[in-house]
Amino acid sequence: MTLPELKNRQSISLFDNRTSNVVHRPRRLRATPAIRAMVRETELNTRDFIYPLFVRHGSGRSEIRSMPGVYQLSVAESIREAEAAAKSGVNAVILFGIPKEKDPIGLENFAEDGIVQQSIRAIKKEIPEMVVVTDVCLCEYTDHGHCGILNTGEHFHAGLPEGYVLNDPTLDVLAKVAISHAECGADIVAPSGMMDGMVAAIRDGLDFAGYENLPILSYAVKYASSFYGPFRDAAEGAPKFGDRKSHQMDPANVREALREAAIDVAEGADMLMVKPALAYLDVIRVVKDAFPEMPMAAYNVSGEYSMIKAAAANGWVDEQKVTLETLTAIKRAGADLIITYHALDAARWLK
Ligand code: PBG
Image (tube, rainbow, N blue to C red; front, side):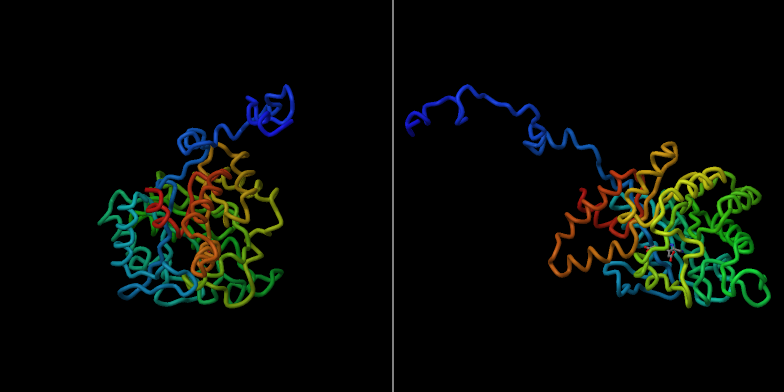
């Protein structure tokens, strides 16, 4: 075939009689931004986000070295940050407290004038519509940095290792903490310590104290993850010795996630959480499919945040695009809610 002949042909196919043998053309629905938008399956919304705040005594704010853009806040600054959240369409915050003093039990955790207690009251007073979630755990408050009362001294229990986190004595403290948050006006309590029976103990305590309407968001499936590293700078809650493997889950396990979730549902959890998010997208999916009736949160943890920040600071990834892609992936995996330090940035980018 000569070149002029070729140019005169109706079809650009080089083969005679061929119109097309391509049957499937998914690209038809990717051709323009408008069509892509029509068939998009997952849409991020600022209402999906829960924004973590670290509250400490004193005044002003101090940036956390390993988490650029995240601060330890005074009570007044926590109001300011919650206002910024509200303004950008993020309607929930989760509070973490850094106490003035630490002790073996973590007494400030349920003190009337504890740092989180002050911050809950202040935020609820200034921004009543803000949903204030509180983290209920011991590790930020104990001098040993563990999530419960330790097997040592007067609590020593023969048959368990020295320094083991004692389960049932810890439950009483968790219930006290939850009640004290409720008394200050918290909207949701979120136990994060992976103690057996923590949801039931907190539910009993809240009901007994007259807070039967207060929901529990359980960190039901929480792994012993190295992605919490920067958080332990932020909350100053690193264990002074050992690790959290006697209560947090083994990253190798997913069937066990179903067991943990089922127990928490049976104990009366109102919402479930998988944590961390990114290395556990399969776990989010499995838990969501097993409990489709339960609202599901995923915690996009500190290490996940800091990795993007560090790479973006080096110019290696586009922070905005990578962040939104990450958050979309977490939602696509099955999360209804995402606890994320990117919340305010993401809200701005979504607008
Ligand atoms: C425990 C708690 C931790 C995080 C949230 N709640 C730390 C831990 O279990 O060691 C980690 C969150 C993050 O890394 O962003 N109170």
